[in-house]
Image (cartoon, rainbow, N blue to C red; front, side, top):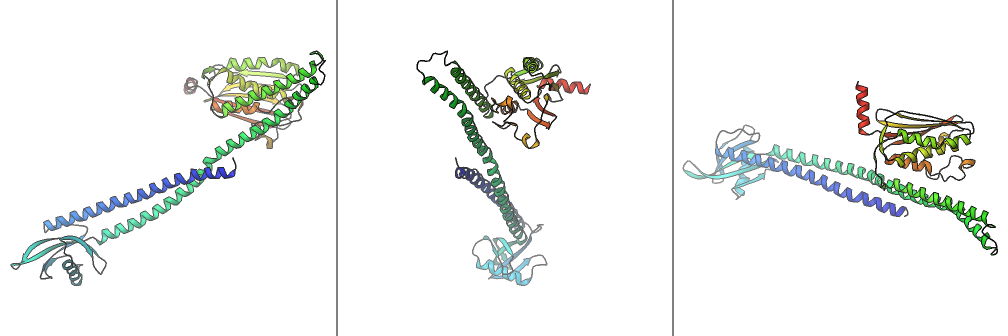
Length: 416
């Protein structure tokens, strides 16, 4: 998968939502304008019909009534602002229009709507026109149309920027996941290359002397067996890492008291600390419950202890604390030693990353332990971090959410 594929995928994330977003903006603006225009015109027509029905009528629009006989106005009622020329212009438009009901505009730019009916003037037949001037309402609709158009254009521009940014953000996890897979395959291939070469060489040495016995080839067989064990360990670690990173965790989690589990893991490492002349201090609070299973807690603590022992010099000290805050169970492991430079702290949880590849105790390590620990902690919705002072100490801190019951007890204790 190259950059062209990622760009194509990004375009799909961009154009489809963009088209939907633009369509929704346009439809919303059209709907608002259509509903407003329909309501405005309906109100004008109602005002016109009311004005035609009775002589006393109040309206926001200007209304007047004119009777036309032989194409000439005879009597009319109108507010003072209507001039004689305007009325003549209106009558001309009315007589040219054969429809009984309708609307028109005059040369002055005014907009009118009218209804007509038969009447009589001085005993002679005439046509009565009730006319309403809705120029003000029409101007309001024009302004609304322009405003909605501007809002629509601005909204489309904002949606364009949003989905352009969103498409880049949406494709980034896919890209990073693919790059991590590539990196995993490349690193795994590199790590497997050496043991495979050793196994192949040992087998070739065994085959070179067909008369030799198993006892004669014992050291070659032991070497091959050791390398096969390393490869098995690497493959199992990769499978576990992939399982947690892809959220493909098929495990039964429950409300778990972790004090005894952490203490048990600490005791299992005491012999290793004794052989290396290390001091291991342990302190824990009681009744700390998290949602997990025993294997996950053991794995996290085991990885941290194993990593700390490797990087702690002889006669050094390890301190493991298990505490709880208002919302979290906190596992803190501090070891003396060289520490980790700041520029390397950001990569400490990367796969296959080793702070010091020349360290004698890490020669058989693949650099996957801390990555696995972080993946497990993340799957438990917790947080793991590292802080270090060069030449003094390194401290790993794991925060796991307390179970609901533990949270309630802690809140009750605080309130008391």
